[in-house]
Length: 433
Image 1 (cartoon, rainbow, N blue to C red):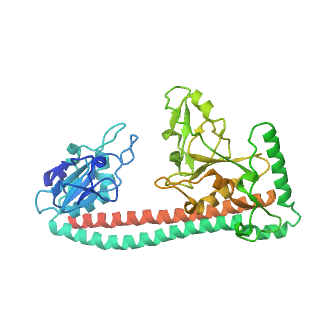
Image 2: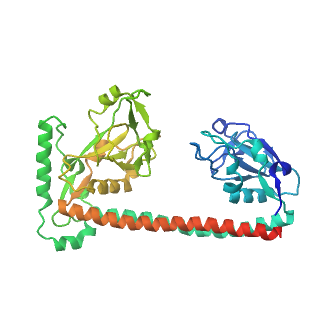
Image 3: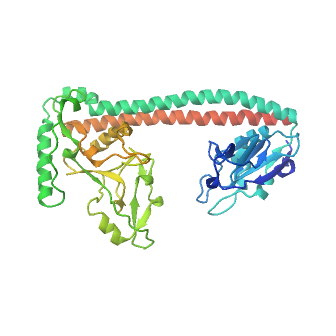
């Protein structure tokens, strides 16, 4: 197959307006995202392929997430380039399909830069395009449309499967906190100490911490009413409120200044939660003096749970690992009164259960939130410690199975995209012979 350069067949221009400076209006505005914004003026009135000029991932890594096709009157951001065929020899739709499927092989290698990786107009003009007839291009566009419909239908089925897996995770947590996962365990262990004795020990430990001024004395908890008991309590369990067995706190309300000192510390918010871990690279840094000032009431320890209580990501959470030298802000902190009283992992199970339906309890207008009072008064069925361990083991094994199922779905989606690439690549090669 012979190739020609993109600059020989297309006029290439850069967007005239920054994406954030667009003024909402009647014309679609192409950005690097999947959805169109709008603008009050248009830049082009034609069919065009739009290529991002900056890396989708940054940090010295070259990548392009998506190519766009747009027709009619439209605007586009200054970090994109529009490629408009100079004549009817080339189809903009064909070029869109070609670059969308082959971007990692054709366009990404043309991106340059050590930190801010980008694609210049000059380099974009050198991109190689197969020199095939317009008739061949139209047949490829038609084939792509057919395959795309089938691909979308298949991906929709797979997306429904992922939704089913999410529902399965929720059902596992629901049955865990209601004791349904450990029915057989209780039958095999009828002589386990009642959870009421465990609750008495936790209360005694709390009184010792109060005497040592490590925690504050709390107000009397309201009586648990019958309408708060949402299921029949298993034998050996006892109703209690969340604050009775776990210490519930929040982060600093101060606004410490950023610091670039050598002895600075991370200030973690829910924005730094990433895939179940804390992303310390994106966190603000505060001075040692500010760090020591703000952790007096929210010092974190390994095994604590950080729980987002404000904004659109309410319910996101992470478990604190070995590194604990950081401060927190605008997140709830769930702590053990004594690490030996409650089974390891039981707090994590219950906090994930809380997150399942938390949005319905969020208050506020533009910035919804969940109060510490809400967390502290949550009603929990407390199992004996031995059964807590059994619950954690059962949940972990079932969640691992869910992870495997989800990975299979993700692999299937990737294979579908690869198959589509292979089919069209084969067509390119056949058409060139």
